[in-house]
Image 1 (cartoon, rainbow, N blue to C red):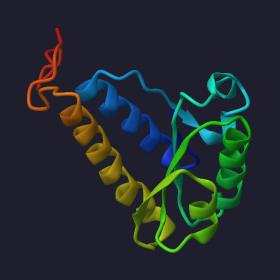
Image 2 (image 1 turned 120 degrees about the vertical axis):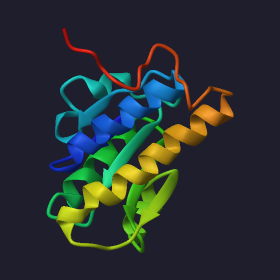
Image 3 (image 1 turned 180 degrees about the horizontal axis):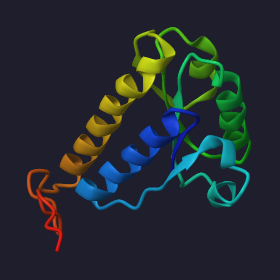
Image 4 (image 1 turned 90 degrees about the vertical axis):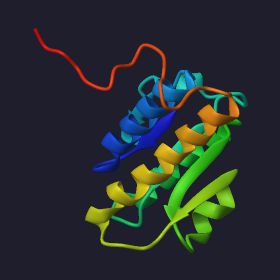
Amino acid sequence: MFLGRGLNYSVALEGALKLKEISYIHAEGYSSAEIKHGPIALINENTPSLFLVPDDNLRDKVINNIKEVKARKGKVIAIAVKGDDEVEAIVDDVIWIPSADPLMYPYLMVVPLQLFAFYSALELNRDVDQPRNLAKSVTVE
């Protein structure tokens, strides 16, 4: 599961899409604000969650969502702002991004998600240059 809130909800959707497209691993993107409306039922020790944790006005709410997942024995990877000791203390792994204006966080967080998908696909020996059933352009009739 890829979870983001506010502006980063769409980034979570993009992360899940990229992982599906090139690694063929089922992934879903959700707003972390909606985690208690269904996705939380899927949490267990075998279902990793990737949270986007910017340093903005929603940070504390995202951290509470992470704690909900951890309380259910879920594994959590976070993409967080370098130096966020609170996040580092509660997640299983963290990918750091630099501190920036909150409007820039979606741009900074999408790159590690794309690299995560890329290296996951390589680890599974997938052809990242020609993913199955995908076209580089779309024809509309």
